[in-house]
Structure formats: structure tokens, C-alpha cells
Length: 171
Image 1: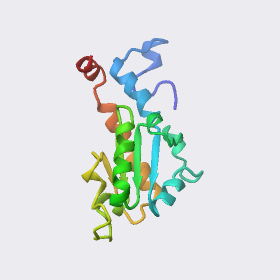
Image 2 (image 1 turned 60 degrees about the vertical axis):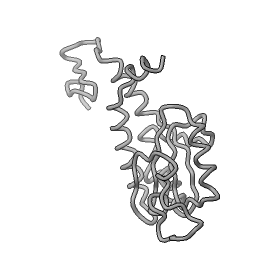
Image 3 (image 1 turned 180 degrees about the horizontal axis):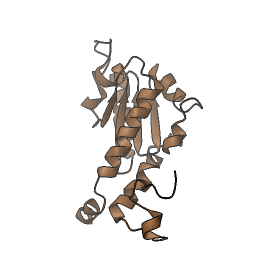
Image 4 (image 1 turned 90 degrees about the horizontal axis):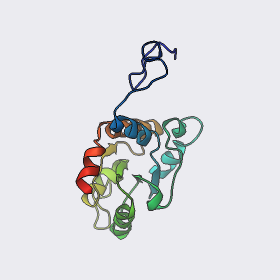
């Protein structure tokens, strides 16, 4: 990218020189957008595709999400990949509640989104019954590209979120 092309924040070095002016919300959201740390909840075959998204062919690191955390207190995105049984549902919900704000959820695959082909007493018919899901990734199993597309949509959502207004309300 040449110096004369405007970037994401609207910076043009020929006009502004060495000075960058932006809104604080925009800067904070830009930092948050490029440092989303997912917690993988690989519960079935979709977890293999989730692992594939971190491989060199797909490289989730390009989006700042390569730091997979297995602790809810160190992550802000839960990726539920696979079949959620009622036996596992309370644990998934407890892990979500332990995550710090802001937090997001991606339901990956048909089983996590709707229960998939399992219409039985043991399978939760969609993780959205216990968690607020931000994005659904379709497929059985979905390709890693589909997960990366959901991650890009989440990054766009993060850029639109007001930061300072929510901080003033909570204090």
C-alpha cells in the first residue's frame, strides 16, 4: 500500500504529515478488532475444521485470532463447534458466563446451530437456546473459510460497537 492511499482510519500522510487524528472509540475498536482471542469449544467433528483454520493454508493469524485460549478468563470469543448435548450444555454455559466483557459467540456447524441431524432427547437443538449467538456458520462440517468469513463479520461488528458510551453507563 502506498503512502498516498487512505487507510482504514482515513489517514493520508500527504495531507496530515506525521499527525494522526481519530476518535477514541475508533482506535479502541481497531485494537479490539485485531486482537480477538477465541476459546474453542470443539465438541464434535466441526472441531477438526476449526483446527484447520489455524493451519498455514487458511492462517487465522492474519486476523489477529491465532491465540487460542482454553481459559474463559483469557478469551473473548467462544467458538462452539459441533454437537452440544444436554449433558455438556451447562458446562458450555458456565464457561461463557466466566468470560469477561465484551464477549461474542460463533456457532460453527449445523449441530451447534440447530442440532443438526440429531433430533433426540440428548441433543440441544441449537446453542442459541443457552447462549446469545452472534454469528452462525453453516455446513456439516463447515469449511475453515466459512469460519474465517464469520470472523471477518465479527470484526466488522466490533468496529461498530460504541466503547465510551458503555463505559460511562457502567461507572
